[in-house]
Amino acid sequence: MKIIGVKPDTGETFQEDVAEISNDYFQEFSIFEMSDDDIKRMIDRLNISADIKALLFKFSKATLKVGSYVLKVGRKIIDYICSAFREYPNTGFGMLFGAIVTLLIASIPVLGALLAPIVGPILIAYGILVGANVDLENKKLKTRVQDIVASFIPLKT
Image (cartoon, rainbow, N blue to C red; front, top):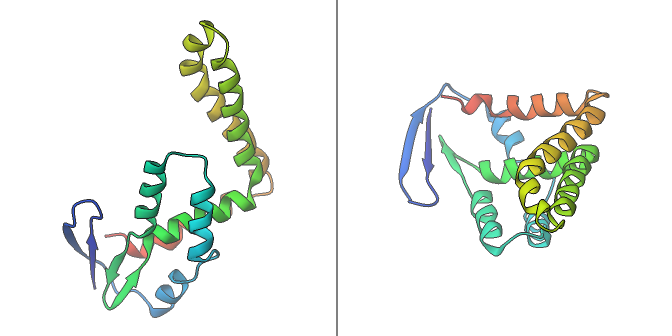
């Protein structure tokens, strides 16, 4: 079975051969937890630049043609991310907490400009780790991430 993809920025196509994939896989891959409108609203509400929003919209439109099926790969990845953020709020909270503390450090005159670039990524990573640790204690997040990774294995060349 052939996978045909189109690079969204250049329009260049690529092809790879993969083993036969069952129709059940294609049916499951086409089920999304959030509607297209929900994804669009979620991206619109993000407090990020318009350029990054445009990139997210472009990414959500990334598709692969596998045999006679068209898979919305970018859309599926964004759907997974959104549902994971809803299901595992401690990880998201830890990341936001680290970012807010970084902004507070950056607001300190002179010293903040020196410390924020160094301490900021460490605080954000630490917040993610602490939040993920809380979420992983019940093993749901680990299982969910493994399920997400496993769902893309049939597309591996």
